[in-house]
Image (cartoon, rainbow, N blue to C red; front, side, top):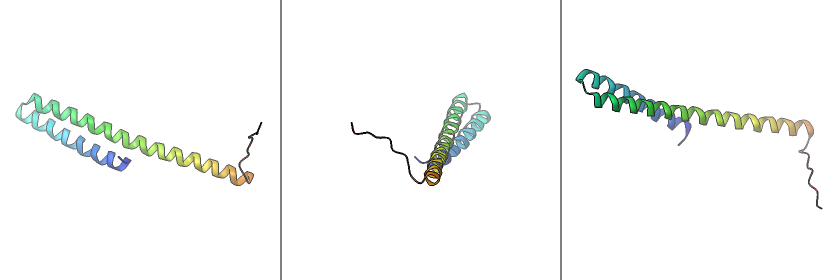
Length: 84
């Protein structure tokens, strides 16, 4: 899943979980409240996964940008391979 998909599914699960908790509270159903809590936590986890994926992409872009800048300054990537 992509980061946006994770965030959308997470937000949906979090909202549905909160709704279930409210219904459970209104009806006195401990089971519904428990299911809602679990679903809300699942949603928060999915959103965290989406945020982590975004952070990884930003980090990768930053590293690539730093490498590209180094190549432009030096004119080439130094190579120290030996055949021996």
